[in-house]
Image 1 (spheres, rainbow, N blue to C red):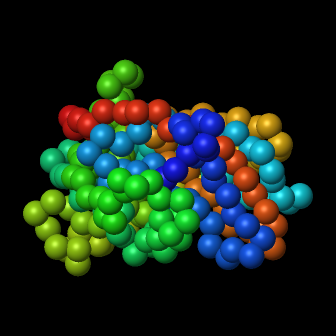
Image 2: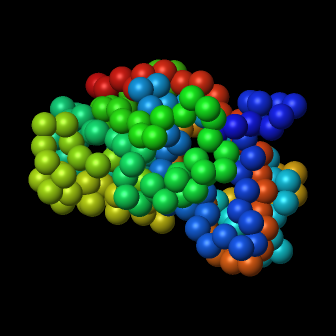
Length: 208
């Protein structure tokens, strides 16, 4: 997407009073459908509704570490296929492409990444599938992949793995996309919300 005219690295994340669907309103790790997804993302709040518009975060280290040994062995050999055209998020992405796409933006992005991602700095393992972008396991059909993926989607956002961030004007949030997911809550209909985002370049995910 296009950035601000004077600061092209800053992307406005805006929901207008008339819009019903928000941007990022589903559990995800940012742009997991890219070959080298971002290392981290940073948001600063400029305009927030009087109530609502919080963001949930989930710890993917904890999600992986609380799995059984048998499940860890199974997942350790799997690769997930991620797509920007996944049904749950395509509508919000299409809305943004209409009004703020960069000239070189593709209509669809696809990438395959390890289901278990090893963090390049900490060496810890984290779950790296998400309900917004992951469509199937490599070498399997969507139907074959669905039961296990649905279990992982439920497991990785258990309440004990999550926290809730309440925005105020000027609030700044910085998170590591390699070991965290987030979900922007869409509970402020009829209100305007504007945040500015900077995305930090990352590397191709590596498995165990």
